[in-house]
Amino acid sequence: MDRQELHRMIRVDQAGEFGATRIYEGQLAVMGDRGPDSAQIRHMADQEREHRAKFDALLAARGVRPTALHPFWSAAGYALGAGTALLGPEAAMACTAAIETEIDKHYSEQLDKLEASGADPELAGMIAAFREDEREHRDAALASGAERAPAYPLLAGAIRLGCRIAIKVSERI
Image (cartoon, rainbow, N blue to C red; front, side, top):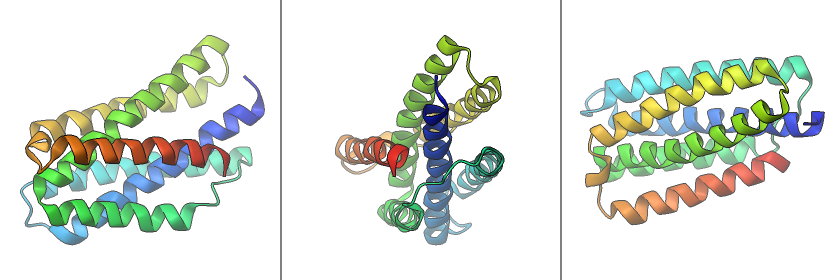
């Protein structure tokens, strides 16, 4: 695995963790502390902030250029979070379940590449640990009624597609 591919991994993962923090900020701005899942969302947001801080540090330490799309991901993430929260608690949880499903897949693919090449044990360790948190977020969202959201299959499918597009774009730009 070459340096450029490792930089793409770090760039996209940092962008994803940044986007996740913005989604939860949007959800909490709408739900505040009164939502049935607010405490759980706040906990997930705290974990995403920790992930982002670690990727921010790795980005700086390794001289990786961040995505140029940060302003877009900031607005899009916040809008997605606020929009799904406006649809109701189940829709907010559907957003989390959909995104974390894609992130689990994304992180698993990255780990397969890193383990096959033996490259970058530090990055592999971070991704493995964060993947477990993302899986917990997905499972918690499903347990909180994500699948009861209005038009769940359509909503989750659209969010998952957007997530896959965001991953591909952020790897490069």
